[in-house]
Length: 92
Image 1: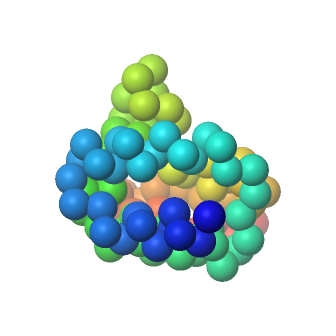
Image 2 (image 1 turned 135 degrees about the vertical axis):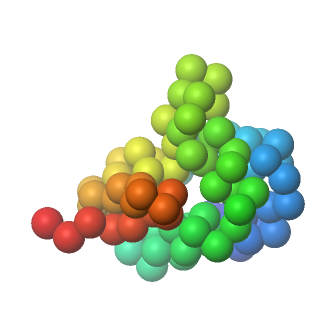
């Protein structure tokens, strides 16, 4: 199911759909490095995901803390948003 969800992210066609899809993020317990990379790449390539509050974390009170926090939580790695608004894995 997780791989189907990750694949569905690439078809996100609106901010509202992104907010709906982001509702699943809190239910994901762990991600492999490959899954996390695929999600981050899809986010970086999809303007609709980047603009949805559930993924960018711009309105945490209503939509949650955003994808970066979920990637950090589910992988144990450190991700951050660049100045360009892209998600990147940070080396330690």
